[in-house]
Length: 272
Image (cartoon, rainbow, N blue to C red; front, side):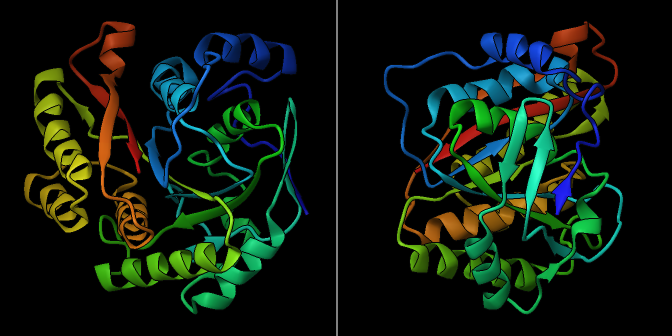
C-alpha cells in the first residue's frame, strides 16, 4: 500500500524543488553525527518547528531503520495503530516501510493493530519523513500512532507494554534502529507561561523520567500532544541501554512569528 502525502503544501512544501531548497537550509551537513537510541522531535509546520527538527537531523545519525511514534490528533482508527506494509509517498520520493520490523512489532504486542486508515490524515509522523529521507536516503520506517484518551492514552501500563514490544523488536533485529517520538509541547498559552510549562516537561525528558513527565503534564496541565509517544520512547530507550539525554534546541512559534500571546513550544532532545 502506498500512503499518499496528506499535508504536503500545508505543513511543509508541496513540490520536490521547494522541499529540497528548504531542507538545504534546515539540515546542515555535518562531519560527524551522534549515534543515538532515540530522539524527541517536533511536528508542527516546518515554518514554525522546522529549525528545531532540523537540528535533530543535523546532529544525529539516522540509521537505516527508524520506529516513529506520534500522537493521533484526529482519533481515526485503532488506538495503537501501525502502518506495516508498502511505502509513504512524499514529493521527493517514496520511503519504504520496514516490513519485517513492523510485522515483528505487531507480533510482539497484542495492543498494536495494523491500521493504515489511522495514518491517512495524520501529520505528526508525515512531517518527519522528508527530513528522514534527506538525512538517510536508505531509511525505512515503522510508523506507530498513539490514540486513546489524552494524556495517558489508555494508561501507563499500556504505554509500557508497547515500549517493551519495541525493545524486544529492536533487540531481535540486532542492528541499529532509532526511536523517534514526535511531539510539540505546550499549546496556545502566552510565551511566559509556556516557557515555564515546557521547562518542566523538558527537564523530565532530559532526566529520562517518563513517569515524572506524565505527572507534570497532568499536574500542571501541559498540553503536550505527544506525551504518550514520548513516554513510550523514553521507557524503551532506557530498556535498550540509554543512560543520557540532552536538549539540543527549544523555541516557540512566537519566536518565529512575533506573536507571544498564544504560542506552541518545540523541543529537540537526543537520547543515548
